Image (cartoon, rainbow, N blue to C red):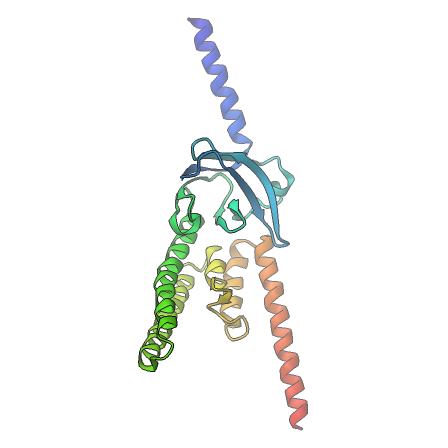
Length: 254
């Protein structure tokens, strides 16, 4: 009996030591996922780096991201972005800080539109943004189908166009409110760069002031974040281009 108790204690100690080496864990269940391969990528300022992959077991998966991984160790001072892939066309992005344990459920048919998540503030805010985009996209796609079917009915097409413009403005207002309500959260970048059909809701030139404000807010919280540094460089580059263009126009009018 004493030997059994000792073995249990040793197992608990070993498990505790192993957990201390885990920076972030991401686990969950993908309905209709079967035993398909699921890949996990770290999204960096330079691009995307596949850091793990595994076959699911009846849709269940678990990734334990080691703090000993140099790619992770150098980024643990701020939230990190990850992407889970079933395929290039079927994936979902999320974000996690050191020590967080994310839990995800989704349907393999469309991970982004069906997933739910818990375990991290940034992750849940990103889910809110994905849900809001889905709420915009689904009726937009239906409106587009109706628009195509009424190619010769100008009044119907005009009404659809007006509805779309209102929906677009409402969604942009939602994103602005999200950014204002979460000034110190990295998910504000996701809101600013959210897009549909390869078009961003915000124009990086016209809305540069908003991006600069996000940068200022997050620089105070995460001064060493590679994402913040990259966004500050982008804003500076855009500002320089705009200034050069203004100077050129000014010289042409003289």
